[in-house]
Length: 352
Length: 266
Ligand SMILES: Nc1ncnc2c1ncn2[C@@H]1O[C@H](COP(=O)(O)OP(=O)(O)OP(=O)(O)O)[C@@H](O)[C@H]1O
Ligand SMILES: [Mg+2]
Image (cartoon, rainbow over all chains, first blue to last red; front, side, top):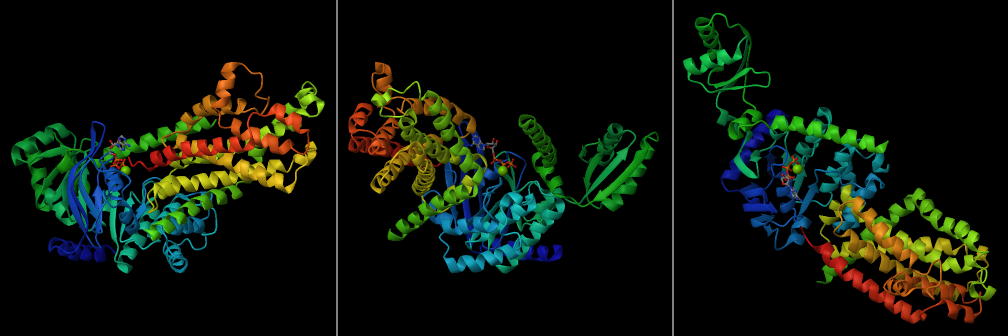
C-alpha cells in the first residue's frame, strides 16, 4: 500500500510540475478577522487528481483557507478558483462542484444515515436514479450499508466520520475538501479511513484537498503545504520536504546533556537541539558513520560523560516542521488534548 | 433562470421536509410542547373561572375565553422554537451542511418559515381538538378560517424567530430574548384578559404586539357560534380582515430583513 502510494506520488507531482491541468488556483489569498490576519497572502495550485495536504498546528489558518475555497467565507484580499470558477464571483457554481467534510460534526443525528444522504442529494439536486445507485455505492465503500437505516445518534465516532465522507462524495464532486478527516479517531479507524480515501482516488478522478496535523497522515499526500501563522512556509512532496532536513537524525542521551552538547558544537561544528527529555538531537549526513565518532569524541574529551543511548532515524515531517518554523506541531497537539479534556470536565460539571 | 427557480423551490421543500421529518420523529417534543398550553387552560383557567364569571355578562366561561389565547400561545411558542432551531443547528454543526449547499440563502430562510409554520399549525390543530370539552361549537367553515388565521400568525412568528436567529450565535442569548420579548408579547396579546379598559402604556404596547392581532380574530371565530355576537363585540378590537392585514404586514416586515441578514456571507 505504502509503496504503491509513493510511486503514484512521484508520477503525479511530475504531472504537476509539467503544468498538468490545474483544478484549484489560489493567489495572494488573505483573510482578516478584525485586526487579526488568519490567512496571510498564500498562493498555490493543485492539479487534477492530486491529494494535496495542508499541514500545520492549531490556529494556523487551515480551516479558514478551506472556508474561503468552499465559499463559506469571503476572502479579504486575493483570488481563488476551484474547477476554473472564481469563488468570490460565482459561489453557487463552485458549490455544485465540490464536496465537503467539515472539521466539526455536521450530520443530523435524529435522522438515519440514509436520510442524511437523501437530504444531501435533495440539496445538491441529484436526480433520483443517480441517488439510488450512488448512495448504495458510497455506503458500501465506507462499510455502512447495514447501519444505514439506524439513526445517526446510535453511530460511533468513526462511523459518523465515514458517513460524512460518503455524503461528501454523493454528488460526484470534482474536488473534495477534507478538514481533519480523522481528528479524534483511534489509529485503527484512521487507517481505515485512509484506506477508503486511497481506494477512492484509484477509482475516481477526484482531487482531494485535506488538512491535518498528524504527520503520519500527511505522508499519504502527493504534495504538502506546511502552513504556520497563516503563511505557507514550504510546499513540496513529502520526500522532497524531508530532504530539507538533509541526512539522518541522531538522538543521543547522556549523563550530562548540556556539557555533551557543548562538546558536539565545538568539535563537530554541528547545530543541535534538545528533545522533550533534554536529549541531544543532531542532523547529520551518514549517521551510521557519525555515531562511533560521536562516542569516541565524547569519551576522549570528557571521560565523566556516560552515553546512555543513541538512536538513528530518517527525518520525519515533524523534523521538517521544526526546521522550518522553530517549533513542533506536537507541543500544540498536546495542548489541544489538554483543552478538550478541560472542556469535557466543564461539560460534565454543568451536566450535574 | 427557470432552472434556478425550480432548484430553489426544491431547496425550500428540502429544508421544510427535514424540519417536518424531525418533528414527526420527536414524540417527546410533541408531548412537551402541548403540556404547557394544557396546564394553562385547565389549571389556570379552571382556577380563575369562578372569579371571572361576570366576563361577557355571564354568557361566557373563562376557559372558553382563554381557549383562543391558548391557540395563539401554542402557535407563538412552537413557531419561535422551530425558527430558533437554526441557532441550535449552528452550534451543533448541521447548519454548515445547509449553508455550504448550492441553494440560495433565501431558499433556506423560506424553507425554515415553511417548516416552522407547518409544525406550529399542526400543534395548533391538536389544541383545536379540545374544543368539544369546553362546549365550543365549530363548523367546518370556522375551522378552515381558524387554520388560515393560525397559519398567518405562525408565519409572522417564524419570520420573527428567523430574524432573531439570523445573527444569533448562542443559545444563552436566546434565553434573554425569551424573557424580554416573548413573554411580554404573550402577556400583552389579550390571551388572558380582554384588551379593554387597560392603562394607556399597556394599550400602546398591545398595539405593537403582533400576537394581539392573532388572538383577536381567533377569538372572534372560535366564539362566533357559542356566545351572542354582542359579547364578541365587547371583547374584540378589530375586524378579522383588519387583523389579517396587520399580520400580513408584520410577516413581510420581519421576513424581508430576515432573508437579507440570513444571506450575508461572513
Ligand atoms: N470567525 C472568526 N473570528 C475571529 N477569529 C477567527 C475566526 N475564525 C478563525 N479565527 C482565528 O483565525 C485563526 C485560524 O483559525 P483556523 O480555524 O483557520 O485554524 P486551523 O488551522 O484550522 O486550526 P485547527 O487545527 O485548530 O483546526 C485562529 O487564530 C482563529 O482564532
Ligand atoms: Mg481547523
